[in-house]
Image 1 (cartoon, helix red, strand yellow):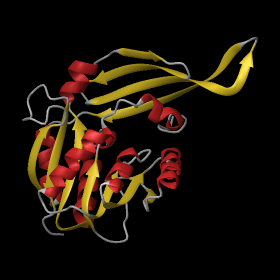
Image 2 (image 1 turned 120 degrees about the vertical axis):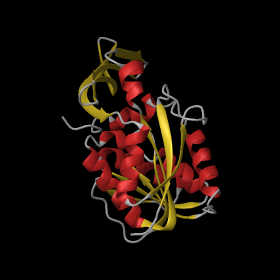
Image 3 (image 1 turned 30 degrees about the horizontal axis):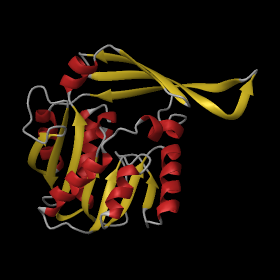
Image 4 (image 1 turned 30 degrees about the vertical axis):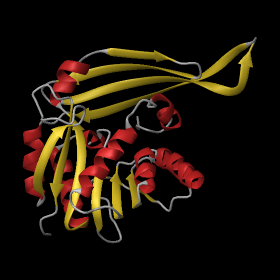
Amino acid sequence: MEAYTDFAGVYDQLMDETPYAQWCENIVYELGKYNIGNGLVLDLGCGTGSLTELLAASGYDMIGVDCSDEMLNIACEKKEKSGYDILYLNQDMRTFELYGTVRAVVSVCDSLNYLLEEEDLAACFRLVNNYLDPKGIFIFDFNTRYKYETVIGDSVIAENREDCSFIWENYYDRESGINEYDLTIFVRKQDASMAGQALFTRFQEVHLQRGYTLEEMQRLIALSGLVFIRAYDADTLGRVTDTSERVCCVAQENGK
């Protein structure tokens, strides 16, 4: 079952509390440390383009890469409304191709956790290093093993809204580090009712993510040719601890 197909249509609605503005502010601040206040930036795993739009509004020339047609369709609708000259590419993070180099690459909202094998992450990181300008910056976040093992675990989450509801059944395999969540989503049909009752469409998707440790990420960064600069807790902006749920890493291009 392919992820981010039907789910794409309600993704922004169900993710309306995602702190994109704060993430954008953090990224702009981080890039400013390296005198990257403008220029070409790649948003890797851009989804519906929420962060891409904010970075474009901050003065960057944006490229967005995502493997979901449905998510990119929504991103393009946002682009038409905003008028920002954003280039969206329907590509896999493990094999993406650009027309040239960029000043920075960003990847947020645990997009990299969808790469389930270390070889996949290493391939992605090598491409990032290849397409960065000399001394260009790579900023990304990831969900930790601790989050999957302890915080999410084997749980069920449900949320009921007026126009859409979901049931999220979560399963975590400690041996493989793979987290599976099965989504059942109910979306209200427009202009459809029966005996005065609203009609809803039901669809399901299965998502797989893998939890990583900071040590694993540092090793893969080094193998790719990038240089690890620093990491911090993405929620507190403080130091990474054993109970950090999401970690943000900063790496730099170091030769091809």
